[in-house]
Each structure stands twice: as structure tokens, then as C-alpha cells.
Length: 425
Figure 1 (cartoon, rainbow, N blue to C red):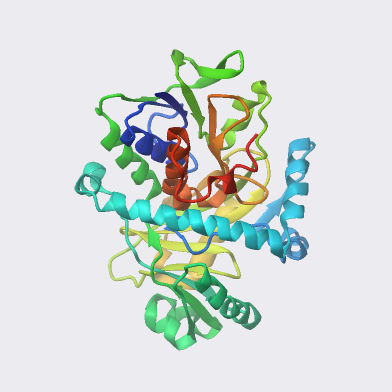
Figure 2 (cartoon, one colour):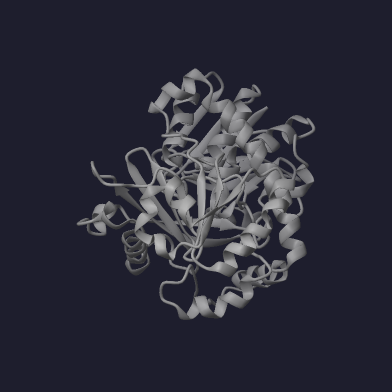
């Protein structure tokens, strides 16, 4: 089958990898000059398979007023006149209950564990370790650090439930937390405890996309068309038959749209309206100087919703979920918050470096209200979607590609594909 994929972020590139391995002719079309140049470029770097609970949860709505009044809060909201924003917000509010959150978490965990298995199979390949210089993949584990006793006790109560879903975790007190990750010694007195998950991983998402491109380039039947803008979808009767680009039309038996939030205007002329909204996130990348005590385990500051991941010889710091317009223009105040928090937690790790030296970045995470991505064929024949992974694109990409490839081949997916079909437009 001839398959055209829109978007060369981590979701598009893993889809191309999986489908090419199934023997399909695959063409990837990307407006940037290389893969992983947008939302996948400088994300948090954590492959956080055990922490996939959706943003919509039973306690979220009560926290929103306080977040909106705090300049440094994990979330910001700027209302617009766009009815799509309000449609998304209403659906998000309806999903903020315990039963919906628990159901979504179970579905996401099944997909994330499948994704973990596929990622392990990938990194075990000799060519994957060699091509493109790798992507600083490491199974470093993860610590969710709590400063509030009530929040920590709540997390401890969830351990048995998480274990029933396949998570392997343990609760640590203050001393055990600092003993495991000495770089946290500077905030020792503020730590109540932490939840440790040894199996969590890290990697450079952009370099992962580049590695996939290296492996795919030159393979018979695979074409990577970078620097090419998709201007529309070609439709004949009741099905999509290809792409219209600024370099000419591309014929295809099936089209997969994996272009993140940019997929919304592309799909609109066909009457396909996926319920997506961009959650704007920020990161900084801190070079780790010789002799500085930097964390080796991934750390999530639960109170501030900021993640710290050691990727090679850098520390990636990421956070925020801003429901705003304005594209990827960097709000320097938000990026500076990451600098301030990093210095408060790890002291000298970023000492003397100004904001520009820390490579501030912003990306638009394409999120569904429920947190469940859309994986499958739309109501228009030949038009497939692999969209809406929010902040979990890197974590879920391999599993999503596996589900998509199975559905396109008529195979029964390892996880229940219907779990991710409800939101399909």
C-alpha cells in the first residue's frame, strides 16, 4: 500500500518506521528541513510510562482559580473568542471526574507499556544504536518528589492501585530520597518523601527522530520529503487519495495525518474537526559543567509540575501547560520561571548562565480533553489520524504507531484499538 504521512515529529516518524517495516511504500512530508523540529524538538525528554494520567482529573478544576492568579503557576489560561477553545474546555471540564480519569488512565497505561516494549526492541537493534549517534537513551528511573504531606500520603495510597495496573514503584522517605539522588540535598528539609519508579527512561526526542530518519533513508519504498509544505488533502468521491503540496501532488492509497496542532486547519476543509487544543509548554536545556552535582535520576517536582531529565551531558527542564494563543513565541517570563526553579532545587547546576545560554524553547502539545489520543481511520475512507498525544507524544509514539500499523494491516492490535477511536472525527 502507498501511504503518505503528514508530519515528521515523533508520532509521524514512528508511524513511518512501523509501516515501512510492514513493507508499505511510505512517503513522509514535513514543512521543516528535518525531522522532529517542532513539538518534538526540546520536550521534557522523559519516557514516563507509569505516569500517564490525563490532565483532566477530579481535583483539577478546584486548583484552576489559584493557578490563574499565580504568575508562576503550572497552568495559564487566556480566553479567546474562538468557539473551538470553549468547546474543548467544556469537554475537558466534563472529563474532570474520578471515573473518567481512572478509565482514561487504564487505557493509557496499556498503550504506554506496549510502547515501552516496542522502544526496548528498537534500542536493542545494533543499527539503532549506531545510526545517527543514538539519542542518549537511558533507563535512569524517576522520582516524583513531594513537599506536601497530604499530597505524598495520597500518592502512597495509590501504590497498590498502580501495582494492580502493572507499575513497579516504591515510596521513599526524605532520607532515602536524598540517598538515592544526592543532587536533591539542597532541598532536603523541604522534601516529605518521593515515589520511585526504577523502570522509567529518558532520551533526546529530536535525536530519536533523526535516528529514525537515518534508518529509513535509502530504504526501498521510503521517501522523506523535508522542506515541503502540505497545502491540502486530495479527495475523490468518498475517500482521500493523496496530498497537495507546494511541490506537487502525492498520490496515496492512505493518508495519515500526524501533524500535531497544525493538523486542525488541514482537516477542516473536509469537515473533519478533531477536538484538539494546544497546551503550550516550555523547556530550558542546561549544560552540566564538570564537577557540578547534577541529578542522574529523572525528577518531577510534584508541587510545581516541573520535570528534570538528564540527557547526555545536559539537564532538560520542562513544564507549564498554557491554554493560550500566540504560537510558539517564547514568553521569557515563563522560561525564566524554569531557571529560577532549577536554581532553587539544584543550586549550582545552572549557576552563572543567563536565559539565552540555557536555550529556552516552547512547543504546542496537541491535546484532547480526555487525554486519549486519536488512532485510527476517520469517517472519510483512506484518511487516518494519529493525533492528540498532548505531553505524552514521546512516551506513547511507538505504541501508537504499533496500533495504527495493526489496524491498517487488518491485524488485531496488542491493545484495544477501540480505546482510542472514540474521539476520531
